[in-house]
Image 1 (spheres, rainbow, N blue to C red):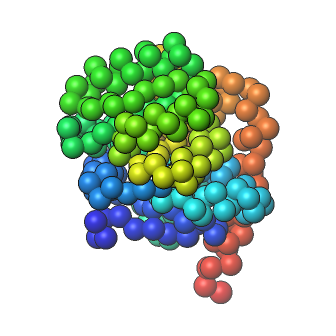
Image 2 (image 1 turned 180 degrees about the vertical axis):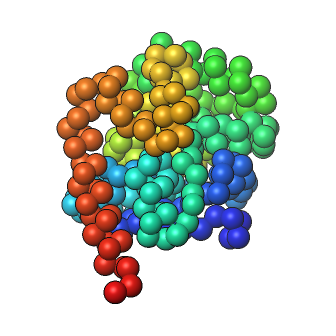
Image 3 (image 1 turned 45 degrees about the horizontal axis):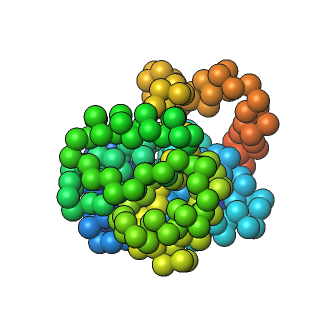
Length: 246
């Protein structure tokens, strides 16, 4: 995979670039087959800035087994600073496709969302990916000790965790530290989208990196989080300008 998948530094934060969704799916299949242990972090503008300003969060990101581009900010930074055209990866979808392709060879767990949203999401996953093998599924309101016990009992190789950042990454880190041999993939609101409880931005907005605007319109309270975007853009342009030949 070295000729397809590479890791780059974006303002001090490592991020893996993928040429397309197929490359991400192939990489995930390899990670599952190699019994990779750890957790992933989806990299976007907010997380890059927070990693620069918050040492504890930076350590959480650095300790991840894989960091994937999940926003326009990460894709733009890869293009400007690394001269790399990376796809904006819907990584939870890539994980589901990889697990379905592996069939019985991939033991999968799904954790997160409310009970109603979770059950609808599981039904939708099984409808879309009939070959998938789900060995554990629990909503996000179960005691951590119980989740860890069941993870040890069912021994999944890959687990989607929809708890929101940084809760899902911290849970994954503790699970790995407890001895769970699994790759945990944080997926935020993906289960709510699969269940129909939330709606993703139209494809034209996703393709033009305007998903942040759609989310802001749908949920105006996000303005506090998205106020970091001008900070990110300023820091990105400052580094880009410094690298230009005089």
